[in-house]
Image 1 (cartoon, rainbow, N blue to C red):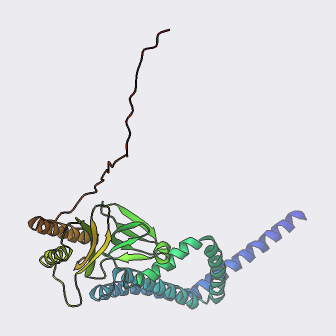
Image 2: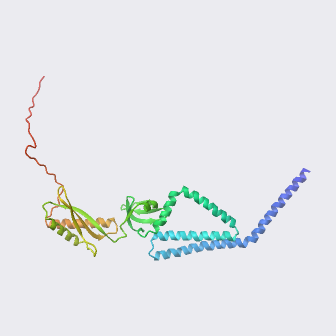
Image 3: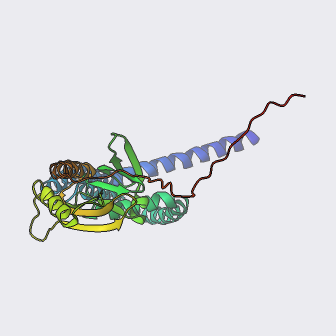
Length: 303
């Protein structure tokens, strides 16, 4: 009796399993066109995203948009097209409930990831902001966060600059957004500032004239630009002044080069006109009654 029950239950289970498999096969056959159509739609969107992103990349390269904007825009466009293709494919397969579940799960996961990766997300959004800042582009010479150099890359995580010693410095985007930066390359010309001093015996109006003429001879001052000369203080051994003039500067090296040429020109002009640039001098005044002398008697003391 027990053997017959076991056989009966086994046959029933096998029959149910067979019916289920046949049901799945029938469902697969019935939905095979939708399945193939969903795969075809997904492939079409992937191919379209690939080639359309290349086209957009070429259009950005022909425009005046900076490289960082091009890179971010192409990536966002490509991901958006592929994501749209995935959603349409799931809709063709009548997996709306699955799609709803995925979106709900994505919201929960995104919230958790957002709390866990606050710093990373901050850098990512800061990278998007930096990409659309016209005052900061790849190839610019900037000073920020105690570093200076050429910008060689701007991505969604960081800004990479190459310093004068050819080392690469990676600065998180949030540091760039939250801190001021100085960009030498956004202005083709800049003002150079020099300080110097001349001896107290100098003819000050003549010194000013000679200095300004020396600068005019090597640096052209365009309309709206001028050479400014100001005596600033009576120093310990010289009368000091500050000189300002305009020159072509696109990076820190151009500033140093302009200062170098200006110093050579000013020193040559001062040598021709016997103008002294004194070094620090300390004068010792030995006045009357400043010192007293004493006679010291040294005797040998014998025990």
